[in-house]
Image 1 (tube, rainbow, N blue to C red):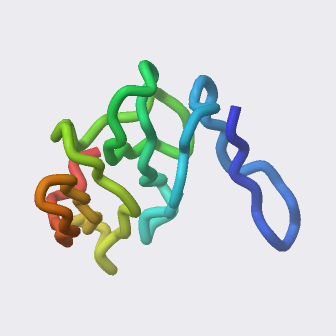
Image 2 (image 1 turned 180 degrees about the horizontal axis):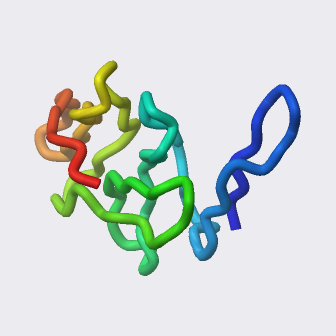
Length: 102
């Protein structure tokens, strides 16, 4: 279980159950309703970008490419997510942008 807490008050904001492995770079949407993160998935087999509503529900997988997609960041209006796509052959990193569909 991963707990997201307010850094000032320590109050619990969000619990990501069943996401014990490799949840990284969590960031809240501008309206605070969603959190985006990269995770290696329930099978721990592929690092992708996910979003989850703060109020609950299951995470929604936004990317499915076999290459690693990391470090999602919200656009100021919350309509898009940017993330890094890391390719192994040849080694390169691209910045990708997509609609935030959650």
